[in-house]
Image (cartoon, rainbow, N blue to C red; front, side):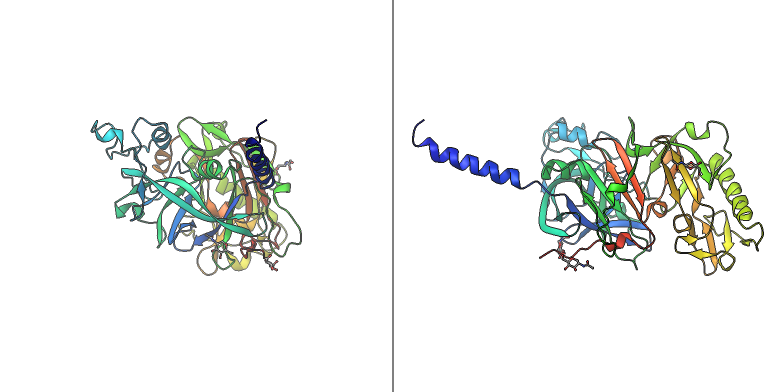
Amino acid sequence: MSRSRLPVLLVLAVSLLVLASCQPLPVVVPVTTDPATSLYTIPFYDGANLVIDIAGPIVWSTCQRGHLPAKLPCKSETCKLANAYPVQGCRASGCGHDARKDRTSCTAYPYNPVTAACAAGSLVHTRFIANTTNGKNPVSQVSVRTLSACGTTKKLLASLPRGASGVAGLAGSGLALPAQVASSQKVAKKFLLCLPTGRANGDGVAIFGGSPLYLQYTGSLEYTESLQYTPLVARKDSPAHYVTVKYIAFENSRVPLPPRALATGGVVLSTTAPYTVLRPDVYRPFVAAFGKAVAAQWEYAQKPRQVKPVPPFGLCYDARTLSNTRLGYMVPRVTLALDSGKNWTMTGVNSMVNVKPGKACLAFVEMKAGDDGKAPAAVIIGVGGFQMENFVLQFDLEKKRFGFVKLPYYANCGHFNFTRSA
Ligand SMILES: *[C@@H]1O[C@H](CO)[C@@H](O)[C@H](O)[C@H]1NC(C)=O
Ligand SMILES: *[C@@H]1O[C@H](CO)[C@@H](O)[C@H](O)[C@H]1NC(C)=O
Ligand SMILES: *[C@@H]1O[C@H](CO)[C@@H](O)[C@H](O)[C@H]1NC(C)=O
């Protein structure tokens, strides 16, 4: 070996050692609930907050000065990834219109999940500014290279929270945020969500990359160890996250549903629907059975008094006639029995919502004709944000499984410690 090579080898060995000792850390951001829209937002880059849409295939925002065009040909792999799940009914023009432009201007389609507005946009280089984390605190600031679509029309932002400038898609597709953070930061393709209840309880937390999760005031409890899992079901026509529900039960009795009703479509998870929507053939028996189960629970005492339902809800009670507990109103627990044999069980905190002073309603709504058409494929149940709050949810896109665990009553998704450790 020549002498001049030795230092080079030494440097190489040392840098390999350094690399091995610094495992890439996952990335954390706070999650804020917007009380006006019940949507959740995360900070993305300076001054830009994006709505999180776990069914969204891309990241998009309104165009801003300083956005660098990605200049990708329409035929590139990345452009194909951006368009792997075409927005149904979106008639905005794009690639394939001008052969010269096709060589440098990939079109992607920002889509507003609330109004279903869409537009043609271009792909630009953006940076996701966040912090790395050890699962307990932020560690240091990172700037994650990302590609986003940028749209120029303001109508794309209608019905989104004030101050939001786009949508961060968290679906299973190649240009959704989890896949982009995974490839830029060399972390696992999975993410954790802990959605806060309202604003008063503080910001919730989203962590990209495999991570433990600790919350303040709960000693050294680590929540991902107690996750229960069920498979995530992939669909060809949709990048959203689906699970399979075998039956629905209140306490220990199954809700009588038409035969095979639950086998005729999917159960999709959604952060852009405030409450769980049920297809009418499931919703009606569900509400009837809940009413009966509430009455049966109070056989020997004064029964909770039903009041005129407040739309969009179909079953409401005089709140003074319900008992309140640390787990919310004392009503029969709602269980979604998943195909893994695990139960997703909700107590009053996740099943009853206070609407007007003195009125509490069953927080499930009937799917309207059109809701179903908007979804890419037949959907029986769209699990909404309210039903997911104060659960730790893990979407593992590598092992294709969904993990969930309800936080104990004394813990709260707003209790992540966002102070950097010294
Ligand atoms: C990173 O964490 C620090 C310390 O908590 C905080 O001040 C800063 O705003 C965080 N940065 C981002 C982009 O969230
Ligand atoms: C799931 O819930 C059903 C209905 O309440 C119950 O019969 C079953 O034992 C539960 N399974 C598990 C694993 O807890
Ligand atoms: C939050 O983290 C900081 C930094 O590690 C620590 O000093 C503080 O005590 C923590 N707060 C709580 C309530 O645990």
